[in-house]
Amino acid sequence: MRRSLLAPLLVVALTGCSVFGQDTPCRQADADSQVSAVWRPADFGGRDEVKIRLCVDDSCEEKASGNPDDPFTSLRVRLPDDVGATTVPVRLTVTSAKSGDTVVEDSTRAKLTEQHPNGTSCPPTAWTATFRAHPEKGLSSPKGMKLQG
Image 1: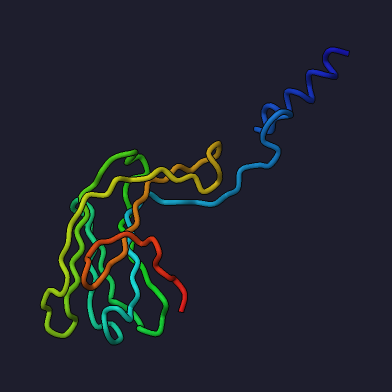
Image 2: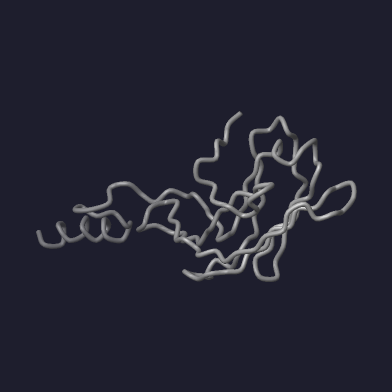
């Protein structure tokens, strides 16, 4: 009798399910540690009017501003997955696609926030920060930014 009761409990324990806790398995959503910037292409003029460059430490990514009819676009700089709860330097440079002149230049430090896309008890753990690239304010908070047309 003891063996027949012990076997089902062992199976439940090994599969990660608990009689007392989590009754759904971890989802398979993936996430990268990153710093990202979002913006409204219309804020920067015509189609691909500017180039937006985002740097974290010495890693940089660049993208054209996009189509002004699109509600928003974004750019991200990937970080090592094990970066942890740290603060990283972030630089934004916006240059005119036609003249090469700097339109916006800003820098700040980003405190990375822990993210768990599959729940706190499931991997992965990602460390992220998000900014709005604004034509007058530079790097600002994305809070309140309407991401629809």
